[in-house]
Amino acid sequence: MAYLTDGFSAEEMIARVAGVVKSSTAAAETMILQLLNATQLEMFYRYDWPELRVQDDYFTTDGSESYSLASVLNNANKAGFGRVVANSVRYGSYSLSPITKGWIDQYDPERIQGGTPLKYCAVNRTDFRVWPYGSSGDKISLDWVILPVKLEAASAADDVSFDPERHELIIEGTIWRACREEKPDLEWERMMGQWYRRLKEAYRDSRQFKQTSFVAEPHYV
Image (cartoon, rainbow, N blue to C red; front, side):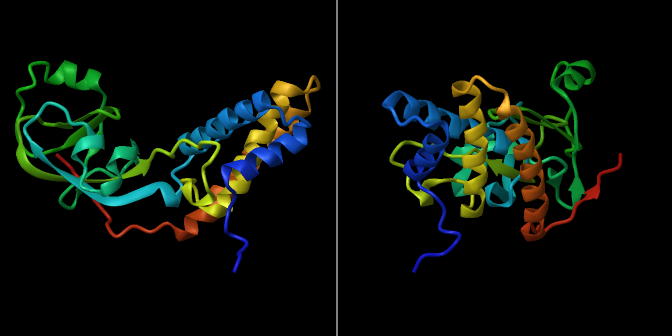
């Protein structure tokens, strides 16, 4: 039985976009596939979609200066680590506040300050720091967002990281990008504006399904 939320394969997405730009050459299909992935990435960077969000994950400190979250997180999806969800890092029942690496360079340049975790610094996917340094055996909990899987020409609907109800957004976002490449007029600008509005509305509507099992309190010092 087919449902409205079965989604689209990459082949079906490519065909939809190619039909709009009136081009079905191999070169056009390669370009469309690249744009499908560009659209996915923008959706990932703009919002913490519920289907991409891993909640209440954790790792245990060992006194290291920095950690690669793609390696140390407990969840099986950690190879697809994308980014930390803002305001989600916690130690026990306390929320850790974000700082920059420059802040650490200024206040603890020798990396010798030890004690209870108070702050964190997310430099990039492979450089996550807890400050003070020097602690070992502390359980640091956080929520994070999965990096979408790259679409290939043979990708099935089930291979798409986004939920099926978001596949139409991927197609629409790719259409205006393809029109920007293939069409001489500026109609793509209007389509782009409409897509960003639709994206915002879709994320707003999706948040009713997003739940968390943990509420952290500020960690005052």
